[in-house]
Length: 531
Image (cartoon, rainbow, N blue to C red; front, side):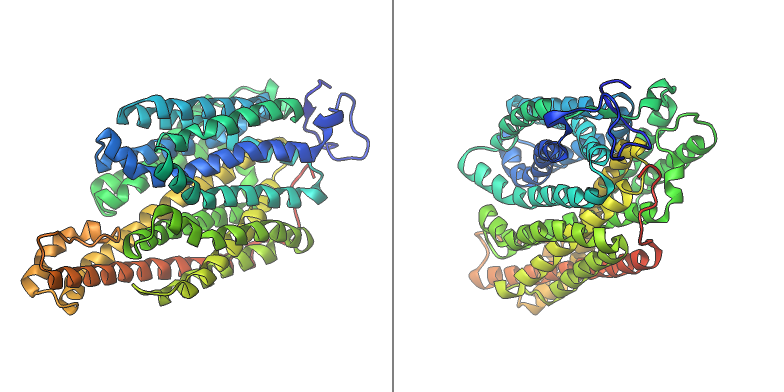
């Protein structure tokens, strides 16, 4: 056997095979620490950019459409390449592609800050997304290879905690950097984290790969079909809110993507000799349901965080930093929930923790139906805690359900599958919930303005400003009489809250359905070959 940690059915027996790494490279907890650096960098970057976007727009004279592409170019590249990144790691070495991903992500982050134009920001964000796709799936793939089954759940719990905390800290870190340094600093911060990750990882990470895969023909057609299908679906999703969900462009993009993905599935099942994504993985119901619940988990998390930040900043008037601090209970709850969820999953299986996590998220979303324009913070922090507990618990249990139920040799592919579900779910959550808010605002704005005391003619004219109101912004001007301005603010904010209540209700119902599906379909034990 080569010096690489080759996957085999004896990977976790008591007698280590010859050539297995020794010393610090044999310590799985050092491996966990190393991959946490890269994971933290990607998670933080994903949520700080939304805080920086307004300042990027002002500094680079960017349009709203340009700013959408700052997010969308990253998301499209990431979603299209995640499973490829996991497959490359399985085949040629997970350590190798993790390090390439960290280096590329770090360099492209610096390039974004130095670009000096909105076109450069968008282009390098796409490059950043591609390298993130090499990095992310191989974090779980390496953990799956080095941790014995009994400790893998706890490792995943810590992995999930790092991911949840980095995402939740983004608004606070981003707010501080944008407010006190510059928008470029939200990207430059990746440089020291990336260098530290590279040095530490190079010293402690063992190589791991699927030795048999190196002899197989690489599935190039599968790569092309999967990338095109995911690109089309995600593009349709992220443009659905602006184009309209019933528009020909949106339906055409999503429909074309689904057709290509169907062709990909048929090709992988019937033609490919060494499939990019082995369809046999989906014969395991726990893995399949875990993938769906992962997507739903981030649908709720990113969608809810998006409208919560709009509520706190645009309706309540908090600064980005103040808004971030008020969401700290969510971060702290996820810190507790991830290892707790992993421990409970290790003892009782994901059949308990996955439905429990989704139920907690349902409680959080439904509690938000009680929020109003002037609600006290006492009504906010309990849903934040419930949401953080639910997200952290589902992260650890769904990771165990997906990666823990895949054979060791497919650890990178399983990590890519989970990361892809996560990204698509997050994109859907933001787009769909924002669309629901916008639709509800459009249908109630005129009535709410009139009810608040605005004259009928003025209320009717202001209905054209529904897009601004859907972001929590009241369409007032300095030329308005004070009484009319107050009525417009009150009516606009109430219309926005109507939209928030609709979005929270839909998210809550989806969580209830997710809990029922997980309780009915997930099996207690782990069934992966190669455990």
